[in-house]
Amino acid sequence: ASLPFDDATRNATRNATASVFYNDTRPAAPNGYLCVYGAKGRLNNLILQNLVGIHMAHHLNRTLLVDPEVSKYYDIDRLSLTTYADSPHRAAIPIEKSDHAACGDPKLISPYSINRGLSIPQRFDDYGSQIKDREVASVDNSDIWYWLGRPPEEVYGKFFRGLMPRQVYLDKVHAFSRENNLLQDR
Image (tube, rainbow, N blue to C red; front, side, top):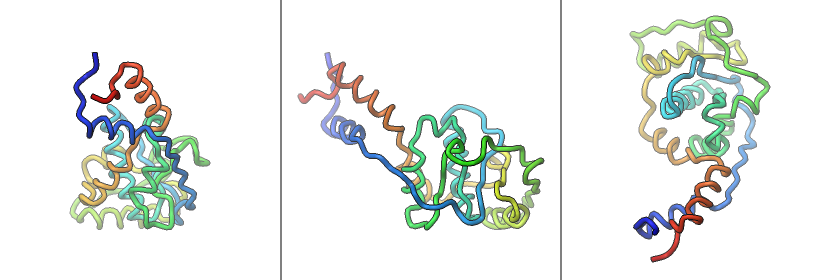
């Protein structure tokens, strides 16, 4: 027995499983890279960390290094291209595709302090001035959550429209749906 999906759901599932490959060939941003150190929690928390991280990296003219826990499941090239499509530089890259093995402790690779009396954009600028000479800058997970703020709604929309599972997972969903007659027409 098949589940009672409506036509919109059925068509969206078919469209989502079409093989479309994204390859962000833009260069890394000129100020280097930014990563979030101490990423922890469920996948949904890691995704939100990367949402703030990609916004902050863009503001600082840096490319976000996305941790493997997220890049394992999601197409980061698509995310980079859709979140900041008009940028001449990559917005994000999986850390494993970069020349950097892991995100280091900010206390060791890019020490900083946050002036909590500043607005969010001012905090970004202040952070940027503290780490300007570092090729890779690291920001602590706790600071991403509590002190570096919520991106504008426009960034939210672009980020979540670009957040698509990698093709291997879409193929598995499509195969499962097909095997279980979940895509059949009514």
